[in-house]
Length: 155
Image (cartoon, rainbow, N blue to C red; front, side):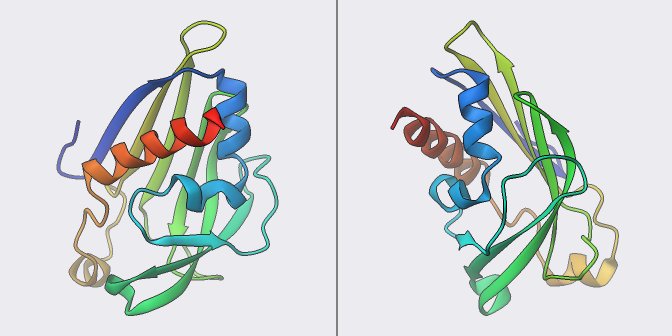
């Protein structure tokens, strides 16, 4: 499902919300679930524990001319239910407005509806909007991230 400023995908994964949240809240795992091919790994970051935490990711992509590092600012956190962050194009830079959201809804003890949203509606800097053509990540790449997540938590 997408509109002009966001894309949302969802999938039921046969694991508990706690198991899935445990995986998602560790930035060390994010390269394994990435469907875009941009994430290379985390940069010495700890497990996400609350709103206000930050974590850095080593990235690579032609849209930035090769390797770069992002700093992600956690803006949503509810254990086993919600994890959201806004990405800054580098450490010490204020996030320009795009957000990644993971929502978990238990469907029983061993099954969870996982909803993943990529939202760039808060990007208002005209120079940035000219420089980066949103969406940078496609609906298929987000669906691939859900498939990667399902495979990773399965073992």
